[in-house]
Amino acid sequence: MAGAGMSKFSVTIPIKTVNESNQRDYWRKKAKRSQSQRWTANMIVSCALTRIPRGNLIILLTRIGPRKTDSDSVPSALKAVRDGVADAIGRDDGDESIQWNYAQERGEYGVRVEFV
Image (cartoon, rainbow, N blue to C red; front, side, top):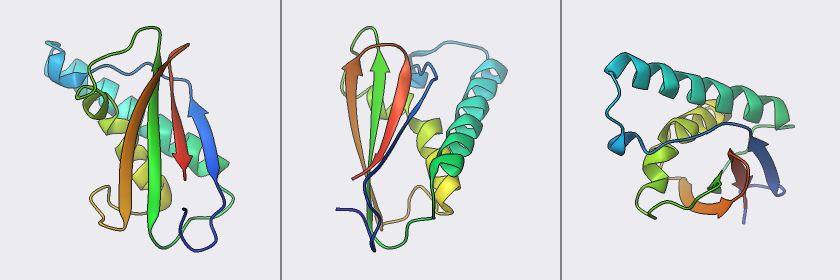
Protein backbone atom coordinates (compact mmCIF):
# COMPACT_ATOMS: atom_id res chain seq x y z
CA MET A 1 0.00 0.00 0.00
CA ALA A 2 1.32 3.45 -0.84
CA GLY A 3 1.89 6.00 1.85
CA ALA A 4 -0.46 8.78 3.01
CA GLY A 5 -3.11 8.76 0.32
CA MET A 6 -0.75 8.09 -2.59
CA SER A 7 -2.63 6.19 -5.23
CA LYS A 8 -0.84 3.59 -7.32
CA PHE A 9 1.69 5.16 -9.67
CA SER A 10 3.50 3.56 -12.59
CA VAL A 11 5.84 4.89 -15.26
CA THR A 12 8.18 3.10 -17.67
CA ILE A 13 11.61 4.57 -18.36
CA PRO A 14 12.98 3.62 -21.81
CA ILE A 15 16.58 2.80 -20.87
CA LYS A 16 18.85 -0.22 -21.13
CA THR A 17 20.34 -1.32 -17.82
CA VAL A 18 23.33 -3.58 -17.25
CA ASN A 19 24.65 -5.36 -14.19
CA GLU A 20 27.48 -3.02 -13.23
CA SER A 21 29.21 -5.63 -11.08
CA ASN A 22 29.76 -7.78 -14.19
CA GLN A 23 31.00 -4.94 -16.41
CA ARG A 24 34.71 -4.49 -17.08
CA ASP A 25 34.38 -1.04 -18.62
CA TYR A 26 36.70 1.85 -17.96
CA TRP A 27 35.54 3.71 -14.83
CA ARG A 28 34.60 6.88 -16.75
CA LYS A 29 32.31 4.92 -19.07
CA LYS A 30 30.60 3.28 -16.08
CA ALA A 31 30.27 6.63 -14.30
CA LYS A 32 28.77 8.29 -17.38
CA ARG A 33 26.26 5.43 -17.83
CA SER A 34 25.26 5.60 -14.16
CA GLN A 35 24.90 9.38 -14.21
CA SER A 36 22.76 9.22 -17.35
CA GLN A 37 20.46 6.54 -15.89
CA ARG A 38 20.09 8.43 -12.61
CA TRP A 39 19.31 11.73 -14.35
CA THR A 40 16.82 10.09 -16.75
CA ALA A 41 14.99 8.30 -13.93
CA ASN A 42 14.86 11.50 -11.87
CA MET A 43 13.46 13.58 -14.75
CA ILE A 44 10.86 11.07 -15.93
CA VAL A 45 9.56 10.25 -12.45
CA SER A 46 9.58 13.94 -11.43
CA CYS A 47 7.55 14.90 -14.49
CA ALA A 48 5.10 12.02 -14.10
CA LEU A 49 4.35 12.51 -10.39
CA THR A 50 1.43 14.80 -9.64
CA ARG A 51 2.67 15.25 -6.08
CA ILE A 52 5.54 14.04 -3.95
CA PRO A 53 4.49 11.05 -1.82
CA ARG A 54 4.87 11.15 1.95
CA GLY A 55 5.00 8.45 4.58
CA ASN A 56 6.05 4.85 4.09
CA LEU A 57 6.44 3.69 0.49
CA ILE A 58 6.80 0.42 -1.36
CA ILE A 59 8.53 0.95 -4.68
CA LEU A 60 8.80 -1.84 -7.24
CA LEU A 61 11.51 -1.50 -9.89
CA THR A 62 11.06 -3.94 -12.79
CA ARG A 63 13.92 -4.45 -15.22
CA ILE A 64 12.60 -5.14 -18.71
CA GLY A 65 14.85 -6.76 -21.30
CA PRO A 66 14.92 -9.39 -24.03
CA ARG A 67 16.62 -11.92 -21.73
CA LYS A 68 16.27 -12.53 -18.02
CA THR A 69 19.29 -12.18 -15.80
CA ASP A 70 20.24 -13.69 -12.44
CA SER A 71 17.94 -12.48 -9.68
CA ASP A 72 20.89 -11.11 -7.69
CA SER A 73 21.96 -9.04 -10.74
CA VAL A 74 18.72 -7.07 -10.92
CA PRO A 75 19.36 -4.74 -7.93
CA SER A 76 22.86 -4.03 -9.23
CA ALA A 77 21.54 -3.18 -12.69
CA LEU A 78 18.92 -0.86 -11.19
CA LYS A 79 21.08 1.00 -8.64
CA ALA A 80 21.33 4.25 -10.65
CA VAL A 81 17.59 4.15 -11.40
CA ARG A 82 16.87 3.66 -7.69
CA ASP A 83 19.02 6.71 -6.90
CA GLY A 84 17.17 8.75 -9.54
CA VAL A 85 13.76 7.76 -8.18
CA ALA A 86 14.90 8.69 -4.66
CA ASP A 87 16.11 12.06 -6.00
CA ALA A 88 12.72 12.63 -7.65
CA ILE A 89 10.82 12.12 -4.39
CA GLY A 90 13.34 14.07 -2.33
CA ARG A 91 14.55 11.21 -0.15
CA ASP A 92 17.73 9.22 0.31
CA ASP A 93 17.53 5.76 -1.22
CA GLY A 94 18.58 4.33 2.15
CA ASP A 95 15.62 5.94 3.93
CA GLU A 96 13.99 3.25 6.08
CA SER A 97 10.51 4.50 5.17
CA ILE A 98 11.04 3.15 1.64
CA GLN A 99 10.86 -0.55 0.85
CA TRP A 100 12.54 -1.29 -2.49
CA ASN A 101 11.40 -4.41 -4.36
CA TYR A 102 12.80 -5.74 -7.62
CA ALA A 103 11.44 -7.80 -10.49
CA GLN A 104 12.22 -8.50 -14.12
CA GLU A 105 10.29 -9.40 -17.23
CA ARG A 106 10.90 -9.94 -20.92
CA GLY A 107 10.29 -7.20 -23.46
CA GLU A 108 11.90 -4.14 -24.99
CA TYR A 109 14.57 -2.55 -22.79
CA GLY A 110 13.26 -0.33 -20.02
CA VAL A 111 12.54 -0.01 -16.32
CA ARG A 112 9.06 0.22 -14.84
CA VAL A 113 8.76 2.18 -11.61
CA GLU A 114 5.68 1.49 -9.50
CA PHE A 115 4.58 2.90 -6.17
CA VAL A 116 2.45 0.04 -4.83
